[in-house]
Length: 418
Ligand code: LLP
Image (cartoon, rainbow, N blue to C red; front, side, top):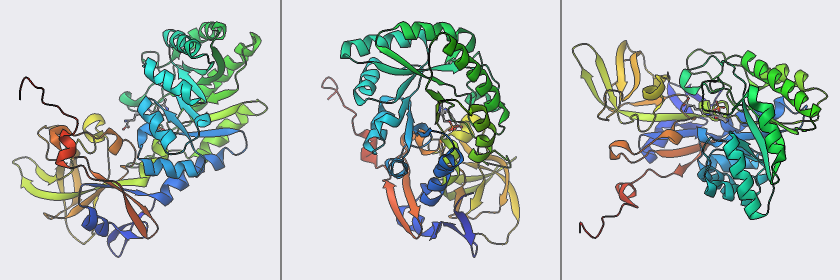
């Protein structure tokens, strides 16, 4: 559910006509609905209120400061994977005590920053990383709280690029080696073992992989207890899918219904790291039709947003629904909706049946709130899009459209060329 609906044939973001936003801020533009963001975020808290829990929003899905501030006001924690994300989370007012830090390649600088900030825990992904965290913590005279990211070898049945919990993936510690790693970690003087972490993939549309993974992890927690290694924080990662086309993904409450009974009677704090399911359907990308072009074999709708603005179709062949901002009765056509970038892979949709669009008309690319702007780039020296947030009848710019000067800012022509 989201708050992008048609009224009298006009697409609205909450109570604001999308057309008004484009008239003010131009295109391409990302538009986020604050009510949708809050509703989706709170769905987790409500579903899991039966046990101690922290909802650590995964910044990688969308790390705009306004959105983070909004979540911070709703007591959000954060899942970060870089020093940059940690900086954003703290700056938005998210409590360090609710921040978890994952990623296979944390640098010394990043580890120091996180230790200094007193985050809840590092989700450590390898033996060598554990040793490095221990060394740095010793150097700083601190004890580093850690969870081990365990790779449970579960097939999440999603796109291969976004599945992460199989043996062949670079993530985590193979479940068969977990006990040895825990023993090692608990022997390191400047490490304090508090948790266990899994994240098996993204855009999951079934609950069974979560349950299978949790079952394995709970068995492991019991084995660890036998050797007096106590786990207080169970981090089940993110991964719930959203509706792009006609998936029927489970909601947080469906997940809770299956998971809470398994956790009954255990003294655990549950940590969750949702990204896409919170922000995905809370954002759209609006783009303008620049030209229509009839090729010999195909029709092309050429729009002003490219793969640099929304990379998911090019990278994963992902489906995003695309619809006119102003509806009218008209015939449909089959076309590729493509951007201005000089690559054949630059498309938003292929062989898509859409209403016959007109030159100059605005189109809305739906479900673009997650991994949209956050994966955007300046490829082809295209300034990145503006971002706008709507709240009821109010709307505000939450990131300025980049300028040509922004593109060269930071570049230096050395003396030997000048
Ligand atoms: N926690 C960890 C450790 C993760 O690696 C991820 C996502 C999440 C949480 C959040 O997962 P979510 O709830 O959003 O599924 N760019 C891809 C998705 C990559 C996901 C990477 N990890 C896409 O556009 O589909």
